[in-house]
Length: 334
Image (cartoon, rainbow, N blue to C red; front, side, top):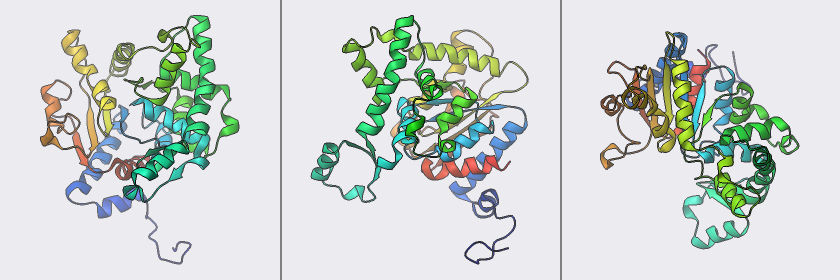
């Protein structure tokens, strides 16, 4: 068979087969090992928690992650508040994002000019202040105020779900909704843990709204400590039977550090008896020798009571924006 350019293409020319054929050694081989172990993990009836640090939403990881969620390859997410909101920003303001391919050559004056135009730069991608950030703030404020008046409290992701389900944003959609990972998560009602949510644009805006007296109390948003308490219940419920839960970590930081600790919390602090994580993989570009926990090899987690000695564990030392879509594509072809 041939493709549209007339080049001969093998009938089995899938991404999975391409990876298996070409990624045979060194760091590339770990991609195959980790992806196949994820497939084996799911085939055994187990579940997967995915964590996201970095700016994965601005990198449009949703193009593959959304389908992973829809096909039940991911069962819970722990992410930074920035990734939670930036998928929604991209959903409603994509056409006004600007890419700066020469970002390494920008002068201070160039940066000031971007700022003055209301563009917030993330590496080579600029997020528009008004049509993305302020638009979402004005829409979600209604739900913060509604909860305030009703004396209710919700996690950050629950406010996002309320906003998406309301249909208020649909008139602004500028990408195919199937490429939004948070829309897919909303449809599946996945729990999304966002430790340190205050370190995000909407977290900052929420505090501002409280100080401006538009919302009466900070307690309208449930805290990270409450998230950990809720994570305990989720983890115990999903490891109560024969199965277990795997851990796929993109980048480092609080998004990965927070949820993995639930196992030693249960076993050591609560004196309980829960299973340790049944699979572990991290995509990382951190350097272990610098004392970085984000760059620690998986074996270190054995000493903290997070992984067993025989837990399938992998570390892919590479750029997550390149590697994660490849791993997802492989798993989707299982």
